[in-house]
Amino acid sequence: MRITSRRKATITFLVLGVGLAGVAVAVGFGWIILNWREGIKVFLGVIFFGAITTGLVLNTIFLLREIRRNEQHDSFINAVTHELKTPIASIRLYLQTLQHRDVDESQRREFYRRMLDDTDRLLGTVEQVLKAGVAGHRKSSRERISIDFESLVRECVEVARTGHHLQPQALRFESASNNGTIVSGDPEELRTAVTNVLDNAIKYSGDQVDVSIRVEAPDEKHVRLSIRDHGVGIPPAELKSVFKRFYRVSNRSLAHIKGTGLGLFIVRAIAKKHGGRAFAESLGEGHGTTVIVELPRNTSRENGAVENRAPEAVRENRA
Image (cartoon, rainbow, N blue to C red; front, side, top):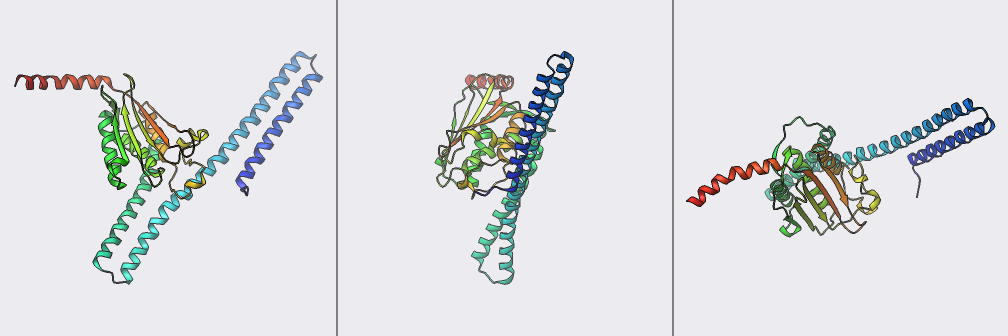
């Protein structure tokens, strides 16, 4: 396998940093051994060389992170460029065909349909990038309201089923909550998070989409959404990394699956903004993936809703 220039630079910086740190430690210990009887000199020397070694280590870590971030940024630019270029080229081809050739009405309608699909793809890519920027801000400018999270997830499932032209059994929804799933937050942001997880599960399921969605209240303080697919899976070492900005799983079999590497980053950012968390579970490649989103439960609103419905129930009983 050919080593890229960036990888060579990474190895060079790593070796240089480790080497300099080793030299600093060796010089420091040598100086201490030679001057062990000079108490103040030894004390100051330990502090001095400790500071140098710490600086070298931190500088090496910083450089490696910057190199890795630049690699991810370049991967993101390439992915977004492809996501934008492909539908634009497709739309241009259909328009040129319509301009220079006479096509029948049925073929014309098919061209229009495909161009609309391409514009939807373009719009989706742009919205994903914009949402990633908004999700990066911890505070939301919108006012939070009480939301029935189970109903919101059901709505997202129906939209995903329709948008991906799936059979009902491909997306199976299950509710295991008997005590309510009211949360406080921004419905648009939560809808974005749920939709991103569903789209990922469908995209990485392969030809046979089999996704199970489960909403439950595991305790009095939390509401949990679990979305499990039976697709390609994620190596255990990369379960945390998939939530980083621009990160994509290093699997050659997934090279044909396009994306910006922002979907799960947005999910985690929205979950954190709402006081919750997002994480993934997988036994490895070929064993599917479960993405879990956990949010704080708004029990005060649930109690209020029950109290508001009580009079209506009494009136119905009296009738």
